[in-house]
Length: 210
Image (cartoon, rainbow, N blue to C red; front, side, top):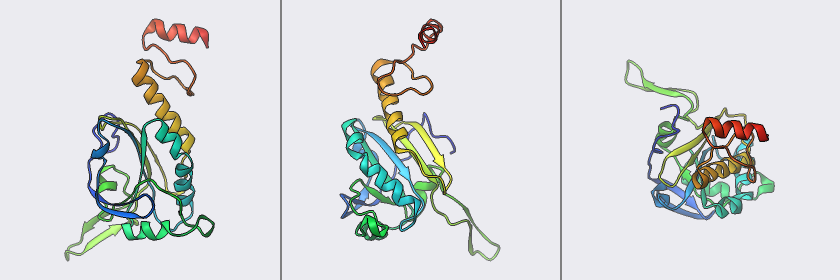
């Protein structure tokens, strides 16, 4: 699918760990339609190195996201049992204890595939055996989804490259500013700065002031 911006976010129902300790079997983003914006982010693996830094970074900013009416949801191709186990390990021991936002288990790889962040490909050989290239895990994809379920921003990093959570908050601010004011956000826009009327005169006026 490649670029999902402007399209409906692919729907899914999957097992997840919520509140850091509770496994649910039928987690879906449908519960947020009409109510919340969603930051859906994918990470490669549980019990690794860069991944916990990102998971903790999102947790540290979780109240800031919630204050803006945004739900944060994580996804990897690990099982819900793996998620739960990692959540029991203290941060100083490489774990993610203290993370409370939902962690979805994409064990059949379909969510990662539908969001086009799945590493590797699979096929069948002449003998009918399943063969795969790569590890079949998720790139570091991130999707900002509006209340109507439309993807408005996406970012995909290669496996070694961690994301900037503050910039994700900036993108939330930009989307909500546009939704509220109808003005677009120019380069390096941040909360508190003026927007731009997307007309010739509006652009000229903005540039003359900046």
